[in-house]
Amino acid sequence: MRLRLDHLIVRALLWAIFILAACLSVRAGDDEVFVWRAFTSSVVASNSAATSTVFNVQSHRPVGLYAAQIEVSGPGTLTNLALEASVDGMNFDRPMLSTGSRMGYLASSFATNSGANSDGKDVIQFAPPIARFYRLTVSEAAVGAATVTVHVAVQ
Image 1: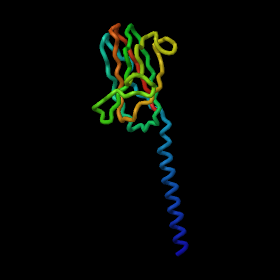
Image 2: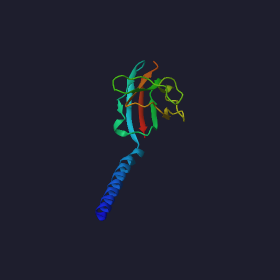
Image 3: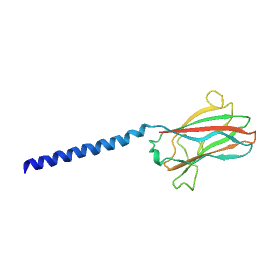
Image 4: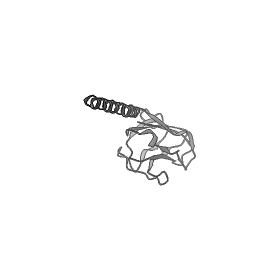
C-alpha cells in the first residue's frame, strides 16, 4: 500500500511540473513586439481627416509598452494624431494619455520640419488605458495634402 501511495505522489508531482512548464512556455511570448501598421503612406487631403485600421490587442497579450513611429511628408501639417480606445470595437473615445498630452493626442502641429531631427519623423512612447481595440485619427490643417505613415510597436 505504501508503494502505491508513493507512486501516486510521484505521478502528481510530475503532472504539477508538466503543468507549470506549460504555463511558463505560454508566458514566454509576452516579450514579443508586434507592429500595428495604422497608416502606411496614407494621403490625408487638405483640411480633412483619416481614421486608421482598428487594432485588436486581445490576441497579443501586451505588457503595456507602446511606441508610435510617425513620418510626415508633403506640404501638409497634421493638426493632430490622436489615439482612440474601445472596449467593444464599436464605440471609440479619446482617453487622457500618460504622456500628459491633451485628450488622446500623440502629436499635434506635426509637419515635415517636426520631430527630434526636424525631418518630419519621430517616435512617441505612450501608455494607453486598458482596452481591447485601438485606432488612430489624423487631421490636416488646410495647408496641403500630407502623406502619413504611423506604425505602432506594442509589447
